[in-house]
Image (cartoon, rainbow, N blue to C red):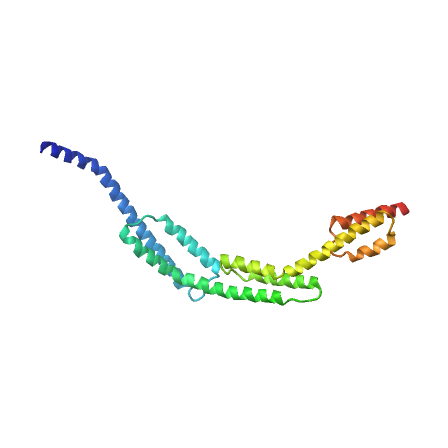
Length: 228
């Protein structure tokens, strides 16, 4: 019995620092729960202050991210408080998430309408088609966010709707580049005159900034200097 009492005394003394640690940890969890409840209150206040005139989705998303970052700072909490706090946090955010989804649906419809406008472009002049597409592209950029995943899909669909314009443009450019190379070769071999090549390069309107076009001009200047 004497040995048991001694053992019991020793274990009690050994437990004292552990007891202090767990008491301190419990208090931290209680404080964390109180801080999380303050975050819930702040979200509820934000909803109350903005429900009559909601900010743009990007500002709502920014607010939710900041709130989540704050929420993550105050962990852990007591098990008995965990579900209650989670539910309160979810319910507080719900009106904001609902508004974001509603506004994103409006943006989705607007961007789908812009895609239909691109599909309807059918001018004979391909450059006019590209100009109309670029104008619609600017509208699409200003239309807002439809949500990251949906936005990426809509953007790809929007651009693919105009592929036919740029494929046609590429064919014209490739054709003019081939023409430029042939003209340069013929000019160097004296198969076309200075007057003829000067007239023909006026038709190469889509490649004026290319090296092929610049080489022709360089060769023209060389020939002109020889004639002077």
